[in-house]
Amino acid sequence: MDCKRYLKPEDIAEGSPNLNLAFVAQIFHQRNGLTTDSKKISFAEMMTDDVQTSREERCFRLWINSLGIVTYVNNVFEDVRNGWLLLEVLDKVSPGSVNWKQASKPPIKMPFRKVENCNQVIRIGRQMKFSLVNVAGNDFVQGNKKLILAFLWQLMRYNMLQLLKNLRSHSQGKEITDADILKWANNKIKHTGRTSKIMNFKDQSLSSGIFFLELLSAVEPRVVNWNLVTKGESDEEKRLNATYIISVARKLGCSIFLLPEDIMEVNQKMILTLAASIMYWSLQKAVEDGESSPSPSPSNGTCTATPDASPAPSVSGEDEISSLGGEVSNLNIDDAASDTTVSSQLVNEEFTAVE
Image 1: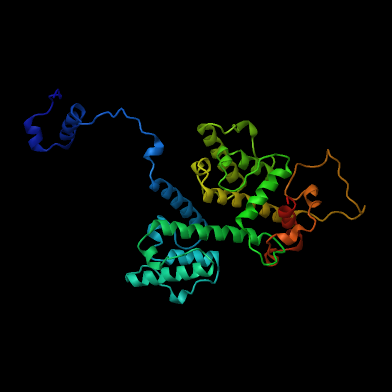
Image 2: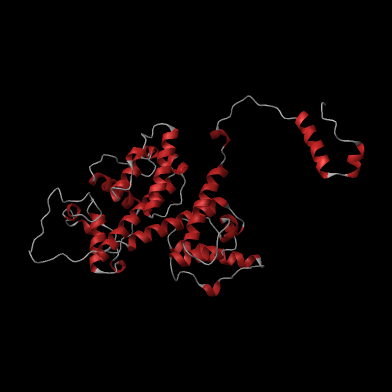
């Protein structure tokens, strides 16, 4: 076999670990039994459903850990099976919704206690109008990945929409929908004079990354370095743009849980989370700017502005205020959510001006 002869029978009998390891390594090197397969298999053919599942699990794990609940999540599919983690998340997202007297805290030895926890999770989910047809608490206890991901997606989406609703004033009892976020994003870009527009969050043009880069530039004009942006035509260019989107969004302070692949593949769920996160940051910035800005001086009675002195389009600029009109009634905003009258007005301007 052409192996080097530095090992004697006595060495094997004595059981020297290093010599025996070297001997086995020599045999493997000379006769490893491996063959080279010349058939090329694309990465797409090698991907399984587990790849997408693991990406979504990572997203939900990061989101849950960002909520600040007591339990830390290491593996979503395992940690939700006793129902306690989901009850904590539900209580965080919808305070007061959980009946803790009927909940069992870990460690839980009796299986039926886990089922009771998960049954309460299902009941609360239905009260929140989640789609839970033919879903039972035992499905979570058994670790049904598909149903767990479906429930967590609805819970995460509910949380995002509630956060957005709380930042909008004069709600009139209406809820924010995906269409509201889509309309806000399209109008925000249109307001800057750009032409990018998407029909929905499944629009394949999103894979280039240009739309989100223009949206980020619309909410904060100086944040995007267009010298680093590609045309987004090839896969490599799309990846560069997607990576840059995530980097810029995080730099702003947005909560980002998706990966570049989610943008490249136009993962509708993850794309929605990105748009909602940018919208939330923009509205929150309007609130903070409103609370920190001083009242205008009434000495002259009027305010004047020249084109040279006008700043770049911003979330609360005069040009946006002028287009408010009476469209507030069409928006889903919550009166009780505003902390002060000034901040409420500015947030309302941010959202309605682009309409």
